[in-house]
Amino acid sequence: MYCKHFGLTEKPFSLIPDPDYLYFSPRHRSAFTMLEYGLMEQNGITVITGEVGSGKTTLTRLLLKRINYAELTVGLINNAHGSFDDLLEWVGTAFDIPTEGLSRVALYREIQNFLIEEFSKGKRVVLIVDEAQNVEEKALEELRLLTNINADKNQLVQIVLVGQPELLDVLCKPTLRQLAQRVSSEHHLQALNYKETVGYIRHRLTVAGVERLLFEQAALMVIYYCSGGIPRLINTLCDYALVLTYGADQQKVSLEMAMATIEGKRIGGVDRHRKPHPEMVKVRAAIKRGWGIDIAQLSNTE
Figure 1 (spheres, rainbow, N blue to C red):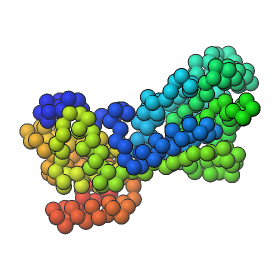
Figure 2: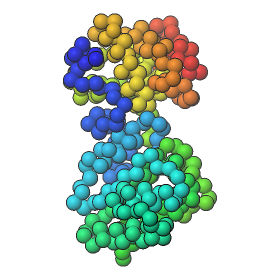
Figure 3: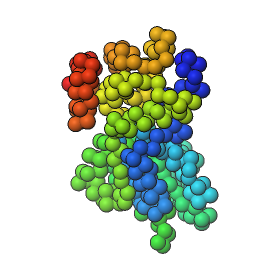
Figure 4: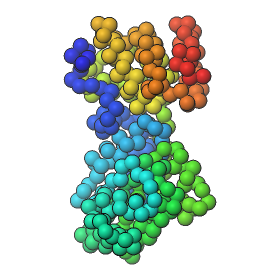
């Protein structure tokens, strides 16, 4: 809709996770390094957590893109949920193991045989569980049993748990201490700061074919404050701001367009539940000092 107007080759702020658009902030680089380390060092369990929309799934997609499939067999469970019985079926499906009509014990045996067979081919098996915070506590604990399947000194399966911060709370429960002790690599993905937010927006515009920054400084500050530095929210606000700017036949997102964007977002795009951290407080003060606007009142984020 607005791509031709701004000289873009495609929409730069899609909500679909796309590793080609991944902005490697220091935070994302650290998280990805931990993912790679977990696989290379054959760690039993790797845990990656982060707020909703922080970029966890995009990192996972990039990992899947870069994995050496000649050495690894990878199974991915998206939007995990449910009991251990359900999870075993998900595991089987992730590796194309027939599950219909099998009891829990029989299914566990089939998975074990699969792991041994892959090891005999010289391949290690990796199971990635996305949205792992939705998996029941008992299922998470029994998932540990899969890591007990070894061949001499070799770990036959590595597990990567990716989830929201609630996953940390679950894993810290005394009842899951055995599982927690198997976690060798972990990283919590923080939200972007202001400088990283500007870099993120510039990066996505560049990938989409435009070298110039299509946002005025004040607009960038508003977007950072209202999104809290969460990539998915940044995408939502930037996309809507470009639509409004296109509709007004302007070439750059101004403060006025950014404010109109926030006023038009009653549901998504604004992180109204996040407590402002010190840098957000500074940005709010700068906007008020420079332009006489209290963005917190406009966005209802106090």
